[in-house]
Length: 98
Image (tube, rainbow, N blue to C red; front, top):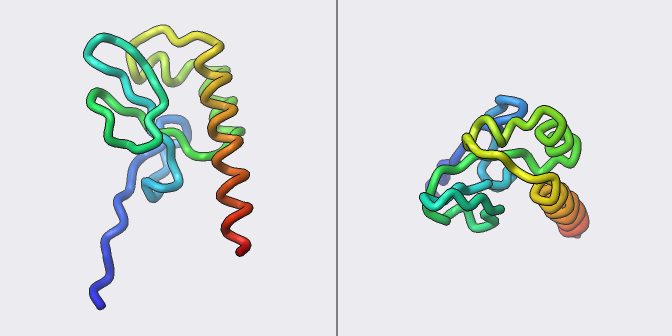
């Protein structure tokens, strides 16, 4: 069986290349709306952050996503992103052990 190529993306916080499934995409639409993109298929400019709560905290403190997406993001958005990443990491660890 032919081995499939794993798509890699670069985290905007750490600069590391990781498999796309280990990252979460944040999309900015043409209208300027910024949202978490769990499917990775929303139209617009995208930025990737690792599924690590510590990396999201670092992005929040340094406002990395603000610079990358060229917009001002609220603390509520960063909190929502932190909660989402924490939840996804917990799910991944729970289902990996089965």
